Image (cartoon, rainbow, N blue to C red; front, side, top):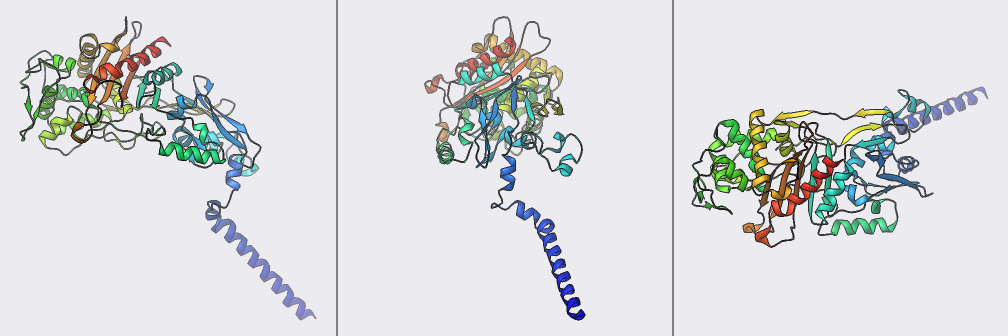
Length: 485
């Protein structure tokens, strides 16, 4: 009998060891794959079992959470959803997260370990932190002015505080309500399908994720490169610039939309946007200085985040002289986001220093204790400070005497540059209307805001579309709102 008991005990011990080995295999070796298994809903149930933290604009929440009583209990809600969609993105129980909802998901969902009262507190107590808050740098008046100014046209606005890099406005139109993607009902699926099939692409963030030919607004970069390289030393001296200008190594001739560009001084050429002068200026300056200056402004930087990722603005570093000439007037394959062109304007306004743009001022716990803070960071020195002062003078002349008069604000120093970018097969597409600018109030020691506006479908006859006519009034409204607030 004793022998049978020993055999039974040994068999039970073997079974116990097998159970322990299997438990270890499941809980340790396979834990990650089981956690990630789509059939495992525990993570989703836990994630949506409490309200999501809020995104703040000027002390007010622009997001919220609604208790549905369902298994995935809390759904995301949005205040003024279309106005702030390019900033917040969406937080969907079906389709995931985008923009700030994605970049700051750990804070908003409460999973960031920095939200815990003590290190390892959640591991010990198995508790979940309340969602934290994301405090943005946005100026609500500027955001509204940009959105209203575009008026539903396809386009975008980016506004920056030049001295710090704070993003004051970020608008893309047409927009959409992110709340349409909250929840798990069939209406969410229909909304997703409808938004993705819309030819106007309302979910495309044109301010951050769309690049355009910048047209004549790129002449700010060309002028900076030429002045720094010494290609031009006197703003008022005649240039040896024929009209029309034959692109180097080709028989293709480039002409102008305005008179008086033959041998025009840089000041006149900048005020009235003479293509021939700037195309020749870029070719004479050379590829290396042009590419270096463009990169110092932020072009070709694939790592820019605000904290949402930003599409790379492109300036080719391998071109012949004809291609360089066209690139120097913002054509050929030069491409820029509206945020990038706001950075160009801000660099002029801040003495040539390019600040890293940022959208999050700080993140906090639910109770308001700071978890992390944003701050000013210098990316590059795009040009010499003296060159920046000359460009401020040139941009001021554009608004006071040239093509940018529609951006003028009484009693305020405003600098700007218009642009009309051709695109499409044989330039058959409706030109993009651009305007970049900065503004300094009478009591300000330095410019308070830099703006870039692009309008894709300017409502005017093709020959009348211009940055000065279509985009400058939008920039003026944004600048007024910042100075007024």
